[in-house]
Length: 321
Image 1 (cartoon, rainbow, N blue to C red):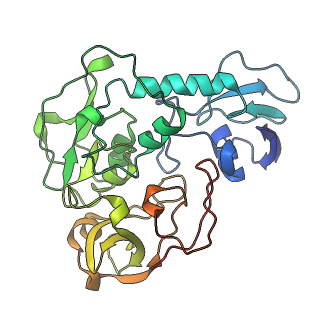
Image 2: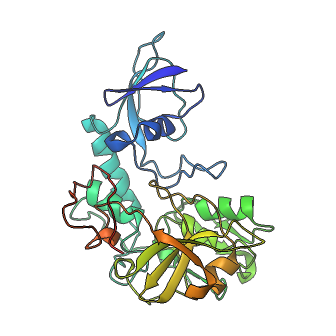
């Protein structure tokens, strides 16, 4: 085990652990945000640059600081390394610039976007973004394409994190979509408008950090803060059958994979569970899911007397059934 210090917090981790995963082991405010890194997808990370940190001491043997900010998702720790995240004004200023860059072409679709309320870019923009934009040029425009009857693609919202591409590459039988063209013309698309349909294609919706890929069966049905997330399971011969169902009264509005506190799916689920099983009788309901107190999904769902903390301090409370 080797020692790394992040924002004054000492952590003992295994060699080869990245700075981001070391911070996640400690938890709390020292964890950098991540828009493209996904621990369950090989090759992910290093594209969005939101997880930049400052290494003020490289190691105990070589305590010199690294000359530039580094991506914490792809930088392994060294014994005695000292890292600054939220304690570094340089990091906070750089992160503000990264958020501004991500929002250059991203439209203000939050009032009509199904991802609103559980969008990582919304959270990032709230914590590190600017109230105004300096961008005056015309935003990117794309021709609308149909990628199937279950998944809706909004390319104008895409931040090119590549998560959906890695997901299709690694957990489906055949990937039919990817990143086409180069530079500022890059876009997620299918070759000759192939339809994205296989047993696990719906997982690209869960891994998308913004509203670029959304569930057509849930489209415009409700806001996420009006529905109640419940843990549920069923016997399934394709996946684990362990899901989160989002209910309004006795009606199941949508089905998603269960996500951890970093927004990553715990187990990928099949399309039968996601799109076809929309009756309460299809599921064995285990109980309400735990939701961060500061999340908009958790509004008005906590028992009287629970202490609500600031967005930086993530905690859990009992959701009223």
